[in-house]
Length: 92
Image 1: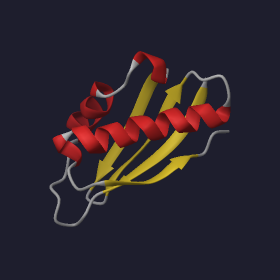
Image 2: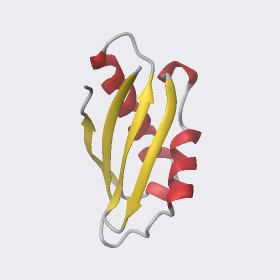
Image 3: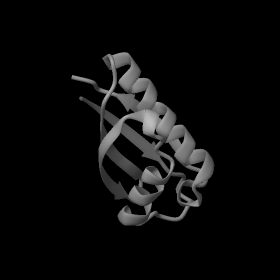
């Protein structure tokens, strides 16, 4: 299992996403093949910062899967309209 950090930034004009809504939005776009086991998330006026705990064959694939989940969430979830991914990485 790998731990992958991520940071999502929101524009100043975008509404804040409550932590529970943002977490539910992330889970809603997870696919079985992503290997996501757990998500920890903290939201703020600047966006959201969190970690995925996921199963993957190697660290690079873990980062790739985490990035794919973030991309899908920003693309599909109204909670993240106008947000962007600023960091995905940090696999120990």
